[in-house]
Length: 133
Image 1 (cartoon, rainbow, N blue to C red):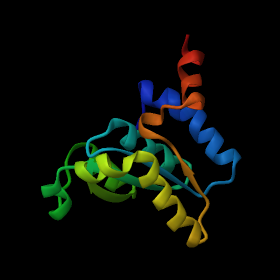
Image 2 (tube, one colour):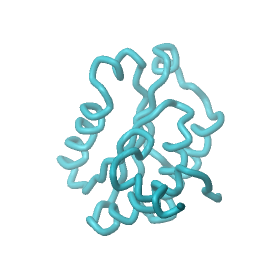
Image 3 (cartoon, one colour):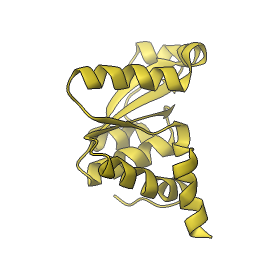
Image 4 (spheres, one colour):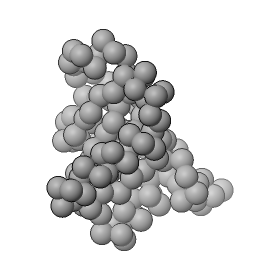
């Protein structure tokens, strides 16, 4: 499975940092058909890291299996652990609190998680664009 585009530029630096820090799993968050989440799941698979995705969707799909379509299909094919949250929960708690809750749970299980923010958008991820110029 190939990766391309702007998502990969960010992930090049973020995944290098993940490996350098000795993490054994990745956490990120986005919409149910997020290209960033799909790219992160595939990159994690290449690096033999577990990937945990918190995917925002409608309340109806949280309560019922959304099936295997689009990016969600790819994420499940590469073995990502998917947690669905409603748009209302996302609005109430925010991405930082939701990823931190999952991070704390994984730490208690003895894991070494690395959190990538929504869209891989942080100062480190920005270097992917700078490098492309």
